[in-house]
Image 1: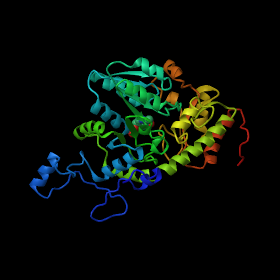
Image 2 (image 1 turned 90 degrees about the vertical axis):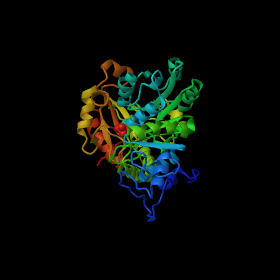
Image 3 (image 1 turned 120 degrees about the vertical axis):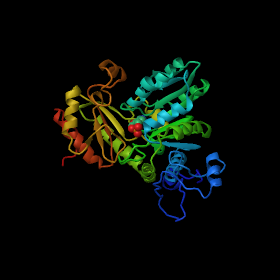
Image 4 (image 1 turned 90 degrees about the horizontal axis):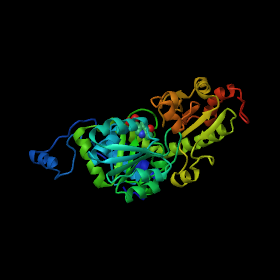
Length: 401
Ligand SMILES: *Cc1c(COP(=O)(O)O)cnc(C)c1O
């Protein structure tokens, strides 16, 4: 499909391959293998002389449709779908790096990604140096002759720090390394890292690409020659995306732009309200002018996204009170769902860090993270107001129900 179409159109229509039945909606092909017309055809398929499906660890038509649609949305030559976001990162590393290579990564990345780099990949002779997400000079200092990969997540979790993707891409290029961006928080509806100079995009499709908290999946995207290496690992090692999950994601992508715009609009309204609340010490949201990288975020992203973090006055007890006072928002560490979620990072997602590490990362005991869903903003706000108001600092200018 012509990639000159707008993102809304690509999300609905890119990548469709119809079967002999000419179905309108994307078909779900639940089959582990494919039948050949003859011995000669089987041989030609295995030799790669004839295109076509062989076995679902290699390709499946529903998975291929998802890959083509996401590639169109990210403006990538090729997409390789994986069983989860973590297996996307694993497939990238296993497909592209070798023992003796070095990674420079942002310190503010998903916890399991840090574990993967520090505890698993390290055993195979690939070392990682963690640096600031916002200070490019730290990346420059960390570069070694064997640095092969830069890895960043922007905006970061939970503090929504925004990294300068263009500046990191330029430094990576000058250093002979690839820049990979985990685009989970924005999705291609709000940010297209490849257009900003990145070489690789990583997705946890589990989050906004599904958008309704149903299935796990991931993807690696970029230039064909890089993705061929990633696919080589995947087809052999097997953390392939299931056809059913690919079908769910195809349907999710149809509403991606609509949902991301709605998440962002609600998050901005909520962030503004939180910033004015006396029980709130500080709000972290890229769409707010008070955000440390607001200008960069507004250049790099279409809008602020759906994640808002804030420090409650009174530390852990106060933060837990706000969580426990909610009656609607789900208390869960997941995000990117139609249902709003709330997390206390210090005692959940970031509890494996020491208190000193958390303090250094800016993750205070009063910090809460909200994944703003698609309920009405008024209802989300009221659910948070119950706990915040009870902290003894009545909110100003709030609706009374
Ligand atoms: C959830 C998440 C991942 C991991 O994805 P899974 O699908 O859970 O494996 C990676 N990066 C970010 C930013 C995430 O939020």
